[in-house]
Image (cartoon, rainbow, N blue to C red):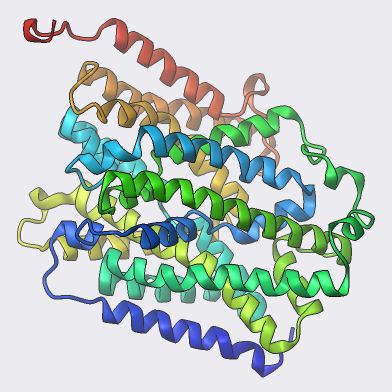
Length: 468
């Protein structure tokens, strides 16, 4: 497609501001706590802005799912995350802020030892690889410029990694404040124009298939349940942990998450409505993942198209930069650590992790250029091994023997991986696998994790006399 030059004015200004904010945050020789957590001084407004933007990077996937399945988007990608985020706010967030640990592997290792820390750092490294969001930024840049997808992914990767490497967590928070405003502003402008030109929700409903107004979207309940289980990711999400640990107080962490849920609900309402408008006005769209930008070009003047596309870029890049830092931290701080690179500063070790993360995520994005498939694979394989070891470590003391934690960290990954491979092997495709017993890999993964936990609880060490 050829675009009016005015479309690129706002995106160009936005990218320049990102570099400025990242460079402004740069300091000298940073400590690990400063580079990873920004000195643990995150205020409530900053906490809300950075959490809302970071947790909503899959904007093109949301557009695709809404275009294909309608209101089901909210029941799959909205409601379950509110539930688990609320549980996190009340039961997990204050405990994290009261701890001195910087990361989830730090937390697990502080209770269950160095081997548990190393194993969990591998899973959190892969859990936070920004590959799904690099695919999205690649699709969007390629669509805007007509450049090859691989080149578009590479440029988005290099740019996002650049300002993170300059300022660490502080740079991420500073840029997230700008991105928070842009993501809401872009969708508000597009919705306003749609209301004026097309009509409100009642007029929209008349133009949609019945399935798009069904909460299931025509999908099976087992399909919906599988995505609800993936929402458990919230409880072990390194981004949540990082922001809670960086907050100025336990109360800031709890309140911040509850306020963020309100903003997610508002943004979900906006994105779902826009996705439904896209289905109604562009029924023959061949690439549903691009339904949002395609609709913007259809109804907005060039300058406002640029503003909306900037909002999309901000939504995606706010997650890419956070995931870059999280994954690099898992590699440079948790996996390598000062034991392996004694003469290298904490920030330098994390910058080494940034390069490793960028390379691996880039090739992963090229190998599986599907946002939904990447989400599914990462969530399915990496939630079961980490879930209960992390939650139990929040007590601050061993509740089960270390051997069972290590067992779960291994079997919780191997079992769903084997199930996934078996399903893909039967059909030769990740798009339509046939799993043994008809069960999604998440189910056997969580089942074996529950069995290990049950055995571990029976075999738990006897309390000391002073604890009786």
